[in-house]
Length: 487
Image (tube, rainbow, N blue to C red):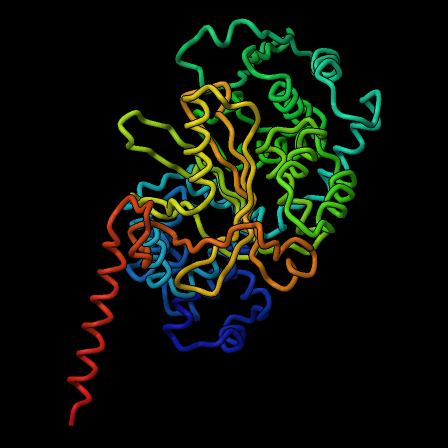
């Protein structure tokens, strides 16, 4: 109707005069918020010089063909629009304003995603990261729920005990816990837990008995969250086997966030880091001691800081990266970013570098290699921790990076390093007293070897082919400009 009215060069006011239907009601019809009765449809058809059947036909003309394709696809059901406060009707209104152009844009995005082998699951996880970044990864309602649970069900205000969680899981959630069966299935080694729902009887939580008590506490804390927060759609495995909906991913995130908030109480961390940031020198042992006294894994601890530090210390330009490393005897080391979170912009390094070699000058990569050496020599005892100032060779950006590395237990063939990076802006320098500690190495880095201008790099793993290609393009452009501007 809107397209037809515009083709007739009629304003809403003019159509209102012809049909004796109010402007506001016509506007609601065009937005899909009202469906008129037959007498109004007859009036509109007459004013627009078309038949009644044409106006109510389910077949759209060629100009609205792209809109028809979108409506018949499942894209509107796959897009978690409500996360961004968008109603499907608003999106349809936007699409109907310029259907051909917007459909071409959407088709382009779909084609790009196919070229990069992006699936609906990849898209959902990207939306989740954006959702976290929109809220600076801080969710007050989950923080309050975790604090409420501590007060109601934990016997003391100290660290969470495994026995306390097991008691809640069995009594309140009506679960049975089996720590013997899961690891007997070699195909399921990636799953720390599997929940089997039984009708009418207790549900069975199969927990990998090889996990440390620390890991079991985190798994059970997530199960508590599903029950205590009354979360609906969920995955029944700890690691993802398949994704059915965005709500499933969102609820998994909420359960994970709850577990972190339960194990690492907000106020306690704030007090610890108020003291830590006043130190004039960086101290790896002190950083690890804060982590150890909270009985937390490095991943839970560093990821928890991405919620606390922006909120309470105004450190908003930060990133979290997890790099997994599988050492090979032939020296062909593979480093892969498996988790990342960027607040206030996309920082480097990040996981969008396809088939490139991450810069070996980042200490997160170096520490994985050092960890592999210690494990090979049987000298590894505790997680490795270090700090580095990473200075980009092609930009003025500097990052103060704190990294922790340890074996990927219970999968000892993999090692992992976790890095929390702070852009060294004024807020960081005002908050963190050890920002200029001369004992922290300042290292020139790049995003990947293929893009790196540091030609004398002693740890380069690949030639700078992308850099040279860009330099050649710049040279061609400059020569062409000289030729065209020569009189």
